[in-house]
Amino acid sequence: MKLPRTAWRIWTIVALGIGVSGCGPISWTRITLNKPLHTRDVSFIKPGETKWDEVTARLGPPSELRRTADGMSANYYYYDSRRFDVDFGWGAGFFLPPGASEAPHQLDFTTSTIDADTFQVAFDQKGVVQYGAFSDTATAAQFKPSPF
Amino acid sequence: MNVLIPRVGVVCLVWMSLGFGTSGCAFSRGDLGTPLNDNDVSRIQKGVDTEKSVVALLGPPDSVQEINDRDVFHYYRYAMKHGTFLVFSRINVASDNLYVFFNEEEVVQQVLFGRQTNNLKFQFWPFGGTEGS
Image (cartoon, rainbow over all chains, first blue to last red):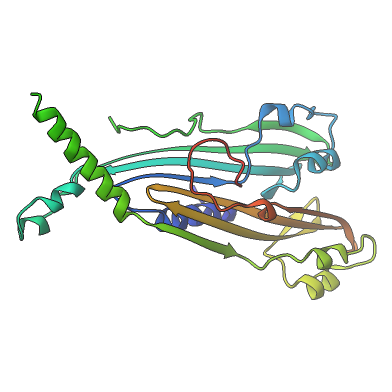
């Protein structure tokens, strides 16, 4: 499946973010994109009643606008990832004899959880909401100490 | 056993101290796209400006969509602020989005602008809420 351009942009930024984050023997890293929308934030949206102007007045401009067969859909993206990394072998480099310390001694445990939400609102040609729904990964991002 | 526990404890403490000590402190910032000027955006007049005049004012849009047989210009900008302190890192990303809707005569019908990068913060503490982005 071809990813939309906005998705590519987001993943590029996230990849850059991971690249510039700390890389010591132990680290907690968090990356967030935009503010999350909650059910209470969008409870005013009633299919068949609410209009485009009201949605954008309360939620702001969407991250992405896409054409649909009978109107358009507005996508609001939110991304939250938490990554915990620990290298249990890192300390061995200080105790191994010269030469042996150059040999690989990494014992890296990494856990990463991602909460990627999209709130999508579809509008008909008159700008009236057809539906509004979250499409989330159902995984609340959290730091986990063990990958097992 | 009594001797072993303190020894393990000391080793752990030394390991942790070295880990903390060799980690650093860093702040970095990244931007994608040209910042949208509030004055330029406010100069766009509904019912007056055309596609041509909007391009003259803001430059070409980052994307053009055809929705309901009408053009929509989308200008965007992403900003990232990253902070690392010892072993904690946090990266906040936010975007500014400007949509300009035109009618069938290619005259501006609606301007929709939202700026989120103003509230973007440098943070390093990765725990808690999402107030930084």
